[in-house]
Length: 373
Ligand code: COI
Image 1 (cartoon, protein in one colour):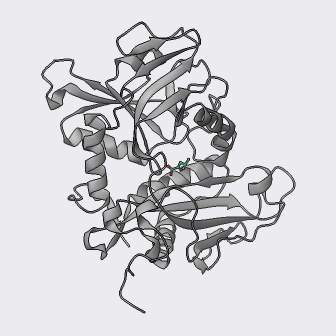
Image 2 (cartoon, protein in one colour):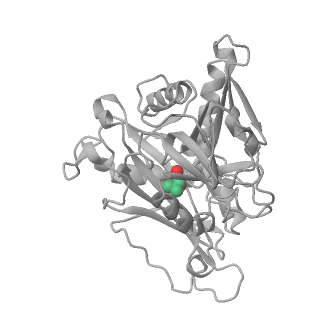
Image 3 (cartoon, protein in one colour):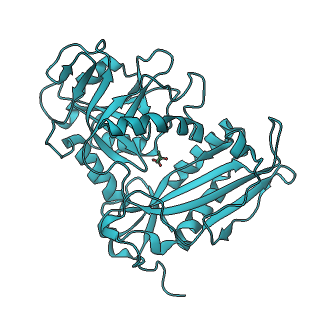
């Protein structure tokens, strides 16, 4: 056995990693039985396929939850670190509880995630690409169960895939989805369960054909407040109320809604912002407030930070006229980054540079966010 970590494999064009499934060595599994009340020791499975009964509630009743986190090669390619897996461990426990499943202990989660990365370490992209290994832990009801009641067995597994960022690095146009609600007012919007994602596919695919790279959801009860993007969290930037242009003039605003997922990336951005002396607010964000932001960006593990070029909503009732607002007979749009400009705004650029710097080991890890593999 050679030194750890092995160098990046030479079967992948690392200059074009993209965001798609690629085969790696294998994944990690553990199962929980209601009879023992315990999770089995983790095992390595050299296969991307899972053996699951066709009557498992995961397949029939959507009893599952998942996570997304990333591992990075540090400078020199000699070390690998996982970004804030402790946060994802706790979030998976929350999602599991929402979907009526037993929690995966934090220690087991960390052990499984580290093992999945270590056993596939050759697939962690080279440091200088800035790309990452995307880690996808899952939990689901896996034994046969016909009635709508708890099954006897659950499976926890961890898959990994080398990836670039989901939406690319250029500004994207966002479309508000009024035809479809992602999550019911007292539903599962705060849990990372598949049921919050699959029904959006039709709408996000259609939006993409119309030129919108990302879709945004409003609160489902009244369609008045901002919830989150279909793939990631929402961050709005307010700049310059005092006109000094100094750091005390920047405020990052994130939605306070019981229908959004507690984004690890978003919360890391807010911690960075506070360390610069910027203000942060977690509060209800009204749709009509969108034109008052100087920048908007989406924040998520897969997405990293995505600068939003504009936000469009069909209909013309919500925005007052303004320099950054255009209205047609069918829709109204607020623009943050004009067509032709490919750079993110200065606030997004600064936090993204620092976030990536910490993730990739180019900046000091002041907050203890890097976990060694
Ligand atoms: C992530 O960002 O990790 C997610 O799970 C979002 C998914 C749509 C790719």
